[in-house]
Image (cartoon, rainbow, N blue to C red; front, top):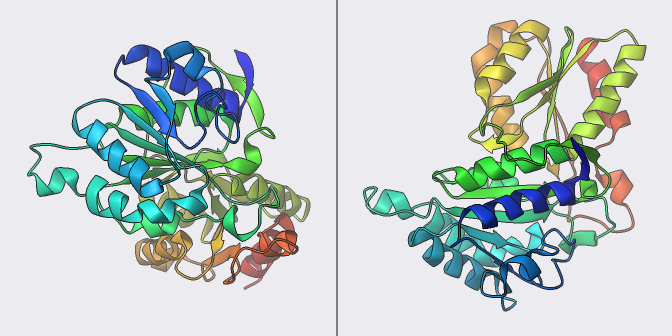
Length: 325
């Protein structure tokens, strides 16, 4: 298999889609000749033409309005929002149009061919307008699917699954890992099931749960815990909507403990939904309160980014507290 970073894997998935569907279009701010701000779409305009890979005006609401119209006519619409922080002007189009299109028509028409790609999270010293993790806003919206990869192999397989899915999907790409994460990726087409978590490492004492870039952090914390004689089961959620309650609950029944970590602020982050569901499913098996190690309830800082983002030491402290409860 070829060695790819996450950007190459995403580009490969898009290339396969463009070759597969003559009507597929990639569009967004600077995605054309420039290849996007992170170069995820590099070379695709030259290969497929300006009529299929093109720049849009700087209007996120317009990007998603156009995407809904294109997808409604059956063409794979591959929209890019340059940073997840910029997605809010398009919020109405996504939650009131994309998510409800099928429902309000009684399944007579839909926008299931819509895939929205957007880089999320910190790690690039981007400050408050280039570092947010807005997944929880959209997790409250029936009709959408939300997917987050943690490495290049997942990025390609999950993105292809999103594009093939019959529902509109938001594909959150952890920008910190774009070039930092490198691994073996098949050059041919493949998919990874949406809605299925992955048990990355089995353990017996504590379940650690995260997604995207935060997976690296909880794996580091698990290694520290192993040195202290604590066995951690590490789970990558991968899909936020729908999320894999069964896999997480099965793990917590085994370990009796759960620690959830995400970059987004702790209050009303998606970790809260997981905690509420798992305490309902696993109440009699819990040995300690479910813990969340998350971002702070402040705007994302520039100078204090390292203090803001949950790191391995914070997660390790939560592991010890849980075990010693």
